[in-house]
Length: 89
Image: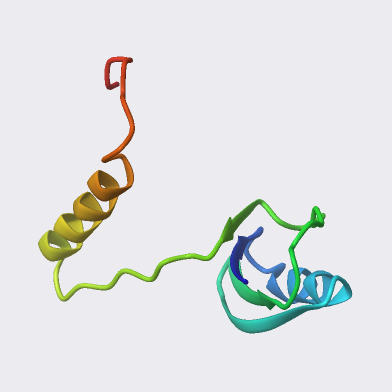
């Protein structure tokens, strides 16, 4: 399972080392985030992690307008079977 993990900017190396303690393998990293691969179920709470997103989906587009359309399509596909009863903010 692949995970996108965010952290405080500058703490990526510490977060990668912490993930390695729990058998995570660093795939790539950037400013304030890492992507790690896990062979078994990821059950640990990481101290330096702000957010942990399992199986992230990479979305790319040549322009902001195309990116907006792709994100809207993903969102509507995700909520297709759900009923939203509360008003939108």
